[in-house]
Structures are given as structure tokens and as C-alpha cells.
Image (cartoon, rainbow, N blue to C red; front, side, top):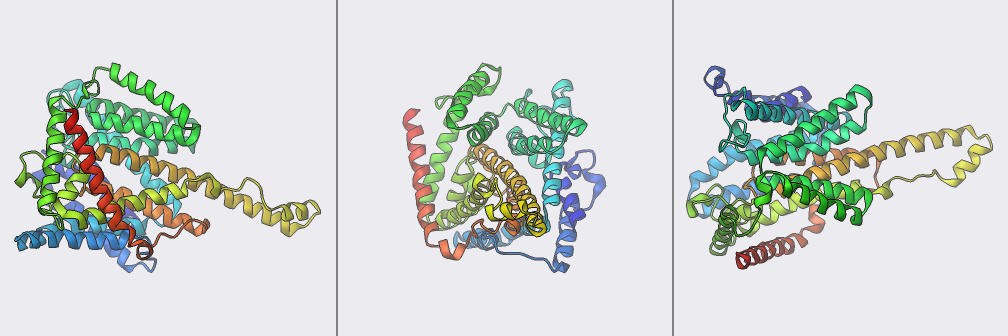
Length: 444
């Protein structure tokens, strides 16, 4: 099963099936086949876990996507939406269950990082020669791009930003040439972010670094270094220095956000229907939150927001320092000092457990940073349904499920116990988006 999952992830990220020179020769839907093989092995596996609240949310969200089309008078859209999003749901379930131990979590992080670095190397070649090995040229003559779901420089930047924390963490676990390798991977990814010339990605990278410094060095240091980093980015010859709410591209995005809110006002319950945004406005939403709100209404928005927030809550809880106790129980220490072999063995076991929890805590912080980077970028992109989001979420759920086995003090999140708060959160989120858009419109 895990081998099939690796193949599937390679096909999602490297995407040889989308190479222009290979499209006609492959013939087979390799990505769905790999997913079905992985799902088949998972079905035969006795180890299945559906405790995380993200599982029922995903199923209900799929149902809402389908019902939204029916509610808007297009029954055929429900079938189309099932064909499109059901594989994403299946991929999430298989990965969240199949990554059932820490070694697999680390392997998936490594695969994400290396594949993203390959895409960045493609972009470096593209920048130097004007043409990558896929046959793709530069976007707009200056910005790197790839094939398939990464044919937009902004999507490339989003992937790179999410993978940088993983590469940095992997470099901290090893030494020598292995550490050098992962540092080179991280450097290639950071350079790739710069070559995408995506302002959202550069902002996401800066924010991710700021969150890491805040968590490890404190808010004051993070604030000072954040200002210095922003100044450095503004000094670089890139589109980041052009950030201005009055700039034409920014105005277009804000106007599109406003139109999305008007769609929500006219279709508040189930929205205008998934993938229907462009039928109501000539531009896409350019905001994953506005897109969900406009296309699936308050019901879909609340479900999606709950899914995202649970991921953040899991990694926040699992990254806290209080999970690790620096000292073992005093009674054991006294007994071991008196020559009690059993007490000494317990101390050794306790220390080993704390070491395992500490590494799990560091992985949690890494995935928290990846989530933060992804959603800061996604705030300026329409990427609410993209499979990368749900594979990253599956990695989060899998790691948290694994970590609770040796850190049972971690909270067990329950959708049934918190169901009453999510409608409030959904309405609050919609109001928050409205306020932000109104402020930006006034600033224009």
C-alpha cells in the first residue's frame, strides 16, 4: 500500500503524465490507477482509524458540493462534482490511514521536499534557457511554471513555501553530507519561490519564517527580524515591491472578492455551485476562503473552515513544549540512586519516551509552519479544492493520530462535542471576510 501511495504522490507532484511530449504516448490514467491500487490495499488492511473529525467533515463536504449543484438546478453537476472531488476524498482517507507510523511521516515529508526541489530545478533551467525539460516556457516571459496543476507560478510558489519547513526540519535530524543535501534542497526551494515572482508566495515565506522565530525565539525577535526581512524583499527586483491596494492586479483581486461576497448574499445557504464562480464574474476569486463561501454557501464554508481549523489545532497542540518533561519522577530518581534496577529501567524508558515526544513535537511545529505557509498563499489564490491541500492535511491527521499513541495527554478532538460552535465560527468567518474586503475597497 505504501509503495502505491508513493507512486501516487510522485504522479501528483512530478506529473510526467502531463508532459506535452508524453501525453499521447502514455494512454493510461496513471494517477487514478495508483490511487485505486493504494485504496485496494488499504481496504484489505485491518488497521483503519476514523477518529479524527476531518473524516466525517470530508464526506459531508463532498455531499454539500453535490447538493449545491442540485439546489441551483443542475443535477448533472452533482455527478460531475462527485467524479472530480471523490478521488480527493479517497486520497485523504488512504494517506491519513496509510501513514501509520513516524518513519512513513518522515518519508512523505522527504518525498514532498525532493519533488518540490525537482520542480524548482526545472524552473531554474527555465529561467536560464527560457525552456524547461518539460517543454514549458516561462510564464509572462519572466516567471517560472511547470505542467498540470502547477502551470501557474503562484501554485509552484505555494508548493515551495509549504515544503521549505519540511526540508529544514529534515536537515536538522542528520549530519554530514545528509545535512548538506537537505540544506541544498531547502535553498533550491527558497530560490524557486523567488523565481516564481509570486507576491503571495514571498509573503507566505516571510510569514512562515516569522512564525518559526516567534515560536522559538519570542515575539519581539520575530517582529524585528520580520521587519528586516520585509525591507530586504522590498529592495529585491521583484513584484513584491509592487504590493499596493491601488495597483491594478490588487484592485482586480479585491473587486473579485467583493463580487464573491455578492454571490454569497444572493445564494447564502449552498452558494452558486462548485466551479461556477467564473460564470458570475470574469475573474476567479483569487481567494480560497471567498471561493468556498461563494460557491458552497455558509454550509460548505463552515465545513471547510472546520476542516482547516482542526488541522491547525492538532499541530498547535502537538507542538507545545509542555508535552515534554525535562525530569523524570523524583521517586524513581531516589529509588535508582539506591540501586533499584527496576527504577533505573523505568527512568531509561521514561527518558526514551520523552525523546520520542520531543521529536514528534518538532515534526508538529514543522507541519504547523507548512500549513501556515500554504494558507497564507491560498488567501490570494483559488485553491480550495486542490489535492495538495488534502494530502498535506492527511499528513497532519496521520502524524497527530500516531503521536497520540505515545502522548495520550493530547486532546481528542470530537466533532460531535463541538458541533454547536462551528456555525458560529462559520458566520464569524464570513463577517470577517466582509469587513476585510470593505476596508480594502475603502483604501482603494
